[in-house]
Image (cartoon, rainbow, N blue to C red; front, top):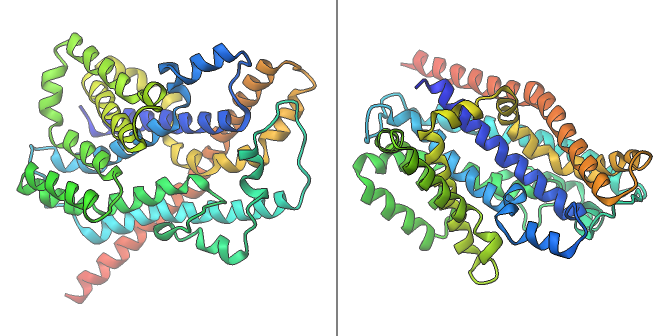
Length: 377
């Protein structure tokens, strides 16, 4: 299986996870599509919660990151091939891939913030929650506060412009720890697991390092896993079923277990779902559909910009719908669909005008530094 096809369908999974986060924020902002209490409980406290379970989607992000970033180093076996790994190009590439686009969106969000807090609230029939109304309006920021939110490695306690950025800080830190993970994996699984547990429970590193570890372990044993699961549809389906149960566990056990247990459970479920995708040719073909590939390609931009769209643009979309739709469900589905489509269209623009130039600039900088290094020899 080619690396290109592999990363395509994994990116589609990431895109669907990003869409889930957008769905969750829309639900928090405008409620569920049905007003009946029984219907709301079914959607909220059952596995049907999966379509807007942003917490589980975050777990999926971190497991996928550990897998995608490390998989290319395990093409020839369980031991990583580190001959082509160079620390400086890797770190520079991650910074330009994550941080630079983030800073640009923070700047744009700051401009939108200044406009929003100075304008009156637009009234809509689909009543927004205090959470979305107060996100910017009840959190005054100075220009220095806005600048501080650009320092992704050290965000302030309260993040206002891009409240979802807390995951990006963890993502950047964990991805910068990958070289250590690869070196430990070269020594053995016990070293890798011991370091992870030490870092999480004694050094205070984010528990999401366990999700990242799971992704790395899947990458390390990818060939053996695929050989075991691919020939047996029933094994694959069993893995998928168990994975979905763990992945959606927050909807059924959130009142009885701690938040950490829920994060770990959804992370395990994410790993099992990925195992199913890695071993199912039909699933890979479905995930390689052009529409899903497009969602996956622009998923980072969608994750960055969707809160600003919810705050600044969705009220106007809902106001426009009121001329055609008067009932709650119609307004909800119409507002949700228009919001998602708008996010995807603007994400495509950000991808080509922001992400690609940022990646290209990072590669040029790496090439320039390497050329100078060779010249000094």
